[in-house]
Amino acid sequence: MSRPLFFVRRGDRLIARVKHLLYAWRFACQANGRVVMVWPGLPSFWHQFDGTDYSPTLAFDIEKFYEQGGSEHLVFTEGDFKFPANGRSLRDPEFASVRNNRFERAFFEQPGLAFYEGNLMHFHFKDENPVRPVLNREISALFWKLPLNPEVAQARDKARRELGEDGYVALHVRRGDIYEMLRQDMPKMGTPEMTEPLFKKLLGHYVTRTAPLEMYLPHVERAISNGKKVAFFSDSPENFTWFVSKFGKENIVDSGTFTARFPIQKAILDFSILAGAQQIISTRSNYSGLAGDIGGGEYIMVASQKYTPYSVDQAIELYQDQLISRFVPNLSANAAARDEIQKEVRRLYLYLERLPADADG
Image (cartoon, rainbow, N blue to C red):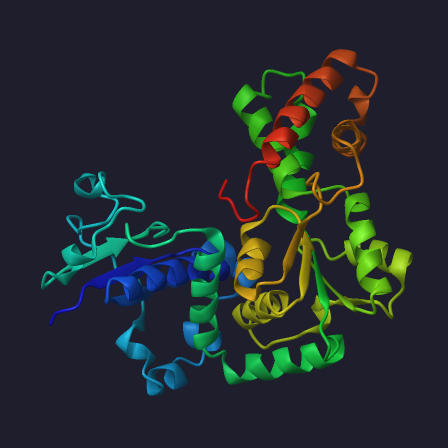
């Protein structure tokens, strides 16, 4: 019987590709189908960070995967393969009545079906139980079926031995690109250049993607008091020094010391170490959220009222004060500007409570 084919294409960075691969693979398994993961070269903008060598074979042992029968379910094709203009997608209007969670299995038994998907296939069949724990177990099982490149696997095992055979905690601090946007654009506050959409975008990223460092402290302290080493991950590695000053080098391990030959190998190495943690201390993040889903450990979203020792008002004040002091100190005495910032921070902080850790946005 002909099996449905799902062509999946992502052209951005590694973990976004991995996420789309896993969700497509999960759905294809349910449909008795096969995934063709289209793997184009990395856009030139990202070469400064990730280099030009971006083959999936540098991250995964695809040859071993195929030898073990994986090609029956998933194959990789490298190159700039474009989807046909009239290619069928499960996001087409014809599927509006069954998307996202009412697909019928009988439909996919038709011969000759092919679909071309550039967006996340977060779909379910009507007879499935689409609750989060079930989904996480399914994508986790698939991720661990895909063997790492041998060099990456060796580096991962070495890092895990350093972090402790009885388990470790991961600390993921998001800063870099978001703080750079704030540095560039927050000084526009009070000028015509600061439009309402820009203001909401800046504060949206700031409140939902980052957190003041103080909010991480009780969780790191608890992990260390429980005898765990803490693996530090961040797009702003200078923050490592701040945590070391609080807890000492013997307790905090900089993930920058876990090395690989290629940037793509370093990316999957860090991600696999993060996914292997017993606990992840982080903010709302696609990157660490996916690692938490795959690893199954506790995910601590430090700004959430479930985990922070700060009250709602205290948390809002902390976000507001740090934003102003770091990026627009000239507005510290401007009551109107402070009120505008506080109002938006409050709206976003209360919204944050309703979001899953890996929600897009």
